[in-house]
Image (tube, rainbow, N blue to C red; front, side, top):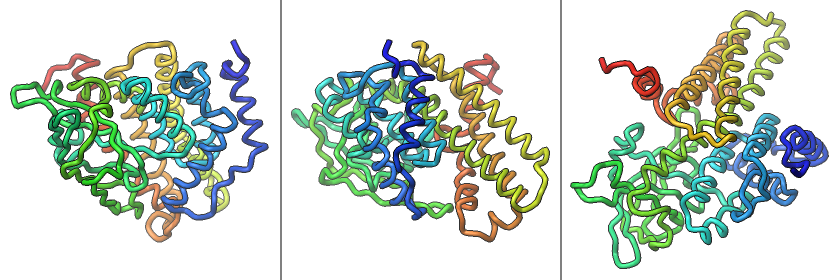
Length: 373
C-alpha cells in the first residue's frame, strides 16, 4: 500500500503541506468571501492531489480508503481554512453522483466539484416536506427523451452560487406508493425556468434559498439512477451527511471551543465546570462519530443508528454556544461578531438534517423497539 494511503502518514504529510502553503482566509467575514475561500482551498488541494485521495479513480480521484477524505476535511476545517458548510456539500453530493450517475457523467462532473471549479446544491426539502421527505410535491413529467419539472424547494443551501443541483422530484402516479414515486435528477441551475430567491435568516446570512421550477426541461440522461430510485438515493446520502460531514463539523466545534477558552482566560475568568460539560459533550460526540467513520470505512451499511450521531451533534453544538453566551456577558446580545452569528445559527442544530423529535422517534422505534405512544 502506498505511504499516502496510510492514514497516519497521510495526515503527517498533509499537515506539512498545509504549513508550507499560504491558504490564509481573507479578512472579510461574509458568505461570498467564505465560498471564494472554499474554492481557492479546493483548487490548491486538488492541484496538489490531496483532495483526490479517497475518491475512486474512475471519477477523477487517486484511490485509497475513504478515511483519507475525512482527514483532509478535519484538517482544513479544524484549522479554520474553510467553513464547514460549503465543505459538507462536497462530501454529501460527490458520493451520490458516483453511486447514481452514469459513469460518463460522474467522470465529467465530479472533478469539477472536487477541484473547486463548481459548487452544487441539494434540492430536497419543500414547504411542508422537510422531515417528511416522502411527501414532496415537485413533479417531473416525461416528454419524449426529456422531463419537465415544476415545483418549489426551500432551505436549499448556497443555491444562488451553485452551478448544479441534485434534485428530488415526484414521477409516479397517484397509485404509486410515496417512496417508489421519487426520482432524482442532476440539473444545471442556469436552465430556463429556475428562479433562486435567497432567504435572510436571523443570523444575518442568506445561506438558504427558495428555488422555483417553472416548466424546467431536463434531459433524460441527467436522471440519477432509474425512475423511482430517488428515495433510495436520499437514504444512501444520509450516511455521508452524518459521518464525514459530521467529522468536519466536530473539528470546527473543537476550534470554537478552544477560542472560547482563550476568550474566557483573556477576560480573567476561571475555566469552570460549564466548560468541562462542553468538553465532555464534544468528546462523547467525537467518540461516537469516530466509530461511525470506521464502520463506514469497513463497508458497513449505516442506517437508523446515525440518528444517535445527529442528536449528539445538535446537543453539543447548542451547549457550546449556550456556554459562550453565559461566560461572555453581552457578546451574544450586543456584539455583531461571529459569536452572535454562530449562536443564532446553532438554534437550528435541532432542526436541519432532520429534527431532534424525528431523530428521537427513529431511535425509540427502530433501535430500541419501543411502542408508539
